[in-house]
Length: 258
Image (cartoon, rainbow, N blue to C red; front, side, top):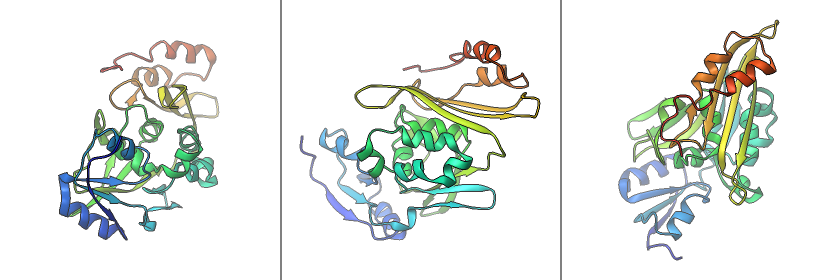
């Protein structure tokens, strides 16, 4: 199908993009990696009067280590997140989630900021940012602020971002030696998660679970913590029997199951 008519703007900097967004507000949509918004425009599920393309905003494409966290720019493609040794070394599940997204074309065009802002309930990154307790940094006319992953997703394709804000980076705190992994059961045609789970586990020298965060995507209208499983594993020896027992509690307390 053919999208409804709109005015196209190619932002030249973050400041320029924010000015355009502030000018057009609710009548604008932001284009990052193109793989979410363009299908919506073609199907006329979205019909903005203005489309603001962030493709030229190079300052939002980076992966860098700060003192106690890993920062990833909003326009960093999935393929770069998946391949970065800096990510794989300390946040392996994040790299695994990035590598599991779509196909080669999607991973080379789609961006972490675009995926999070779109807030698809079956997106792979969603489970990872929640399990790692990441902070999504947003900037708008009133300045910059960080939103915890647990507060960022507010419902189906809905986030805590204001209409005049853009995601600028995502911050992942140091894991302090914790192990992590991401696995999903995917829809064969699209690759989206029917259910995907990100696990962050910290064991002591006796192989007892001293820290655990489990998050799932694809099962509700937003990513969810598997708190019953977390409570069942916390303080217990790491064993197949304890994992099996905890797994029986995976759906405990889940709401709005898809």
